[in-house]
Structures are given as C-alpha cells and as structure tokens.
Image (cartoon, rainbow, N blue to C red):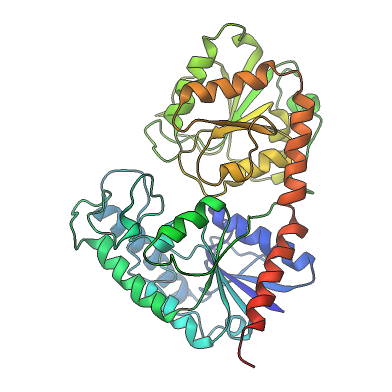
Length: 423
C-alpha cells in the first residue's frame, strides 16, 4: 500500500508535527508512506516538496505571503486566523500523488490547496482521506470558531471580517467550497470527538463519512524521566513543585487563554496552604519580551525547544502541565505531557477531554473558569497519590495514542476505502 500525505509545511505547527508522526508510525508498520509539502523552510530528508525550482519556490512564497497578508487586511484586529484561500497550486501531476493508493490530506492552507485544486484531486479516482486539524475546512474562512454558529448554514455576516454582511468574503468562500466539495469524494478523519461533532453540524460536510482517529506521538521519545533528576537538568530545586505551560503569547491573545492562566495563578497564590516559595513556573515556547505578564511565582522561560528529548525532560520535570486554551482540537502539548507522566490541568473544551480523564490523569476545569483552573492545580499540589496519577497519564497514551495503535486504525480505514474502489 502506497500512502502520500499532503501538508503545507514540514513539522511547522501542530498539524505538521501530527502529519510527520503519523507517517513515521505507518512506516514502522512497513507501509510505503511519504510526505509531500508545499514549502520547506530548509532542505530536509523527512519530506519532499512541490516547490523545488527557484521559480516554484518564489511562487510558493508569493502565494503564502499574499494569502496571509490579504487575509489579515480584510480581518479585524483579532488573533483568530482567517483564510481567504484565493491562491493555490495543482498537485495531481506529481509522480507520488499519481502512484499513491491513498491520498491523505492534512493542513493545506497558506496558498497550497484552494477549493479549485482540491476538487481537481478527484480526477485521479483514488481514495482521499482528509484529517481536520482545525475547523477551516468546514467554515467560510475561520480556523477557530468559538461560539459562532454561522457555519451551520452558509456563513456570511462573519464576526471576524471588517466588511461583514450576508454576502461577505466568508459567504463567498463557503460557496466556492460547496462547489469544490460537490466534486471531491473524501473520507474525513477527526482527531477528536469534539471535531467530529462539529463537522456533523456543518452545512458543508455534515453528511460526509467521518472516522474519529486521534493523532499519535513518539512514545519512545516522549517518555517519563525521574522527576528529581529532570528538575536538576533545568537547574530547579528537586523539592520545588513545578508548574509548566507552553507557548506564551500576548496576554490579549484570545485563542490561547493566557489571561485565564494569569488569573488562575494569582488566585492560587492567595489560597491557604499554598506556599509560594515552594512553587516555580516554567514556560517554554516563543515569548514577547515587551508584552510579558507578571506572574506571582518565580518564573523560568526556556524559550523555543527544538530537541524533543530535552523537551521530554522538561515535561518530566513538571508536576503539572497547565493549558488554558479555549478551543483546541487535540493539542500536541497535552499528549506530550501525559506521555511523560505529567498530569494536565486544562479547560473542558475541544478534544482535550479525549485525553485528560478528570481526577484520574489530570483535571478538567469548567470552561473559562480561572478559579476552577486554580482548583485543579491546587488538587495536584496537595494530592498524596501523585505517583498513581502520573502512571495513569502515561498509561493513557500507551493504550490509546501510541504509534502502533493509531497506525493500525488508519490502515483499517485505508484498506476499507481501497476495497470500495471499482475493480
């Protein structure tokens, strides 16, 4: 069986990483699996690219930048991504696409596969699988929906656009997608139950076949290390209770819920029985030095970590990983933390409940409640059964999200679709 995965970038963002991890999991099962990306930021042996020649690279850069900046020009000054999808390129003449038994789409925005070129793939008469890493495929342009339900109908009157109305860009994009999808036969993979339910409510794809298959993770890389030793690696006192959080954007960033994290930590610091001097906060990922909020605990910024083995040690050093995200499909950071036997405290939203079991391997706080987020951290701070909770975190990943488990689920789906092809 030959499988080709299509993604805009290599390993850039959660979708890129999920795509590469699935590819590796399939290859470990002796599947002829490969990844084709629209653009490589640097030469790589992990993927092949559609943009090889100087002209192709220049065209890709133009499409990517035009898509991103034009979308921003027509959007309000909010941090919710929106795609117009005016630019794209054909992929059907590439040898690996033509030879594949399965064409597996992933994240295809930023000038890669516009609706027109998506529909073109159907000409190959091959089974097409499409994993939805965010909501864009079934909306008129937004990638994160929050409480908006316009996608239930025909979009339009988009709350993200500067010029919003019944026939705005979101509605026009919806119409282009409707036409393209009428020509494209594909099977949808939703990484979370939340995403699957969202797709079923959409006017564009609600009647399509959907299978829920989570993303996977390298369990031999993201694994537990002795916490006291891991803390020493980060030059943290082994007796400290370590809180960890991921990418720290501006405190005004809505999608990542940074303001709720700040409020939760301030609440936690004031609670009886919480000794501030015994707690240290560790943050990894990009940070804005100019607009960095103040925290009530000693804080260490690790910056961007490009080495997964070191990242696993960072997770292992933490006693709790906190993610205040307000909407997420199946966040890699949650899976990575659990794989390293570190419990997670998060809001009960998106696909997070598919991974975090309340009071078993972490804590699911009520949505947008900073107070309950603080309660989850406090629970782990005082809990005497921490080793059992940590073991359960690791066990969850091994039994439900490991490479062999997820590869097998994809192979069963692929084979079922191949069997349906005319002979």
